[in-house]
Amino acid sequence: MMTILEKIIANHSKFDRVKPGDIVDISIDARAARDFGGANVIKHIEKHNLPLEDVRKTFFTFDTNPTGSDQKYAANQQFIRQFARKHKIRVFDINNGIGTHTLMDAGLVWPGATAVTTDSHANIMGAIGAFGQGMGDKDIAAAFSRGKVWFKVPESVRLHFTGKRPAHISAKDIVLNLLHRFGANSLLGKSVEMYGEAIDAMSLDERITVASMGTEMGTIIILFPPNQEILDYCRASTGREIEAVYADEGAHYAEEYEIDISQFVPMVSLPGKPHDTVNILEAGKQKIDSGFIGSCTNGRMEDMRAVANVLKGKKVAPGVVLKIVPTTNEIWDQCLEEGLISIFKKAGALVSNAGCAGCAAGQVGQNGPGEITISTGNRNFPGKQGKGKVYLASPAVVAASAVAGYITTVDAIPDEPAVFDYDEKEERLAKAMAEEPKNHTEKPTVIEGRVWYIKEDNIDTDMIFHNRYLAITDIQEMGQYTFDNLKGYEDFAKKAQAGDIVVSGKNFGAGSSRQQAVDCFKSLGVQAILAESFGAIYERNAINAAFPILTYEHIEAVDLQDGDRIRVDFEKGLLTNLRNQKQMFIEPFSEVQMEIYQNDGLF
Image 1: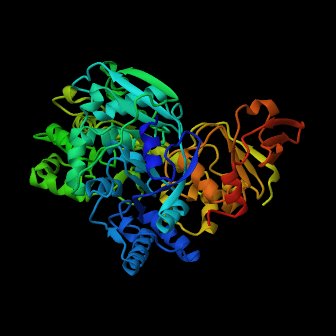
Image 2 (image 1 turned 90 degrees about the vertical axis):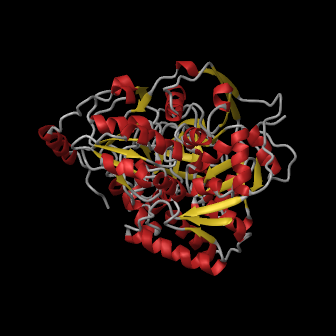
Image 3 (image 1 turned 180 degrees about the horizontal axis):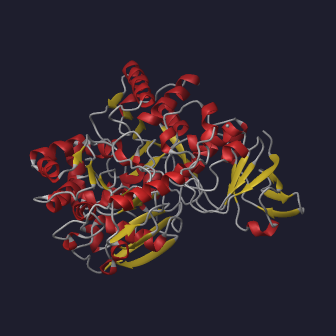
């Protein structure tokens, strides 16, 4: 008896059955690279003279910077175009929109299919009952070449929803309520399946919203068993009959939860952490400078209509900037046909071409120091969407807040918006500028080194290697930017020494699929990272790059202090604090990790 993900993996492997912990090669139905990761994928292919397994299943998507506003992105895009033309690979260019949505809308992924991309939100495919995973450029190069990737079968968790969903609760509210309950790492590395009448009734666009934030919950994927609407959509997009994959009766789940959806309330994420969610009443009346509507989480047609319903006949508050970015070009065109673009423009909003926007440093949606933004995005890590503070909320709440001038709900929009307070904004900007961190410029199985003991959980990839540096492809340039967005460690790159070892808490490397978040440590000569747990994508990227990462359970056993020297045995899984000779067991390298490490990388 197998769960949905176990059956999908088994169907794409040489095994009839798989179980949690198995490491198997799985064939991939759709393999895609984006504009910032695609150039590195090509470099791996050319450096190792790798063949391409099936170009009909291979794609490039230009969604992180469709405006071409950055020279490095523009250069990467042109480099990719040339390679794609040479090998007859399909490119979804700057006029297309977000690639993960295109894979579904164009019928390149369907229920039961598998897909990998350089987008950390590729698990959005769970919305249609497919397996999607964001991976680093080495993995994607391997997928391009072999048509397969290795994957460790995760444990599955079942969420069963009871009660009636309140009419005013949006899909974004649902996922923010789940984040409030489970946080960023309670479901870390798990495949989550969603059940219940309220779930069955959810539309495709709503499922996409929830599935896309599985990354922020630390899950491998959030899977929705396809209903009839999903099957009809996939039959239309693929042009053929579709047989969905459902869990076997009696399938084993590591954990099962019953959740009363009738108790859900409208919520927002407070700045800095997507999982730091509160009832919107607690954040209400917070003045804002800008609003952003879009991203792979909330840029679908239902989202656009919800925004138009709020903005029709209204104006964005004086002193507030509202930016709206549809997910795909097809949705943009539909907004035009339905008259929504006119509503947005008359309300005073900026409407941009389809793409990732605020989540990517190269398109509209970024904010400045001291700026307060309310956004429909999936992340609000410090620095992710600019240098200001970002709240996360539903499209309707963002639109209502833009009209009010402060955070509010649709039913509480005031007759007159909040007054623009020049002095308050001037003071806030001055404070933010004063707090701006300065920019800083850099195989044995047993290692020794000095410890950087960073006692923090959920250190995400934007803290490790900020998205404004994503176009950098030379590893020698990466080290200088390591941790320059992690408060208190902005000068890490200047103080780090070759041979150092980083020790941190839970969920290290959460967030994006960027390979640079691994390679920047290699650039500095850091020998290894030990953490209580790692983000799933980060773990793969590090192992494939032959960069040592290991997990521990109880670091207190060795009385570790910042600056201690430790010895780490990868094979035995043994850590020794050389200051006091205290020892503890840690998770040793697996056979696969050791093989890749001794091979100096996946290739």
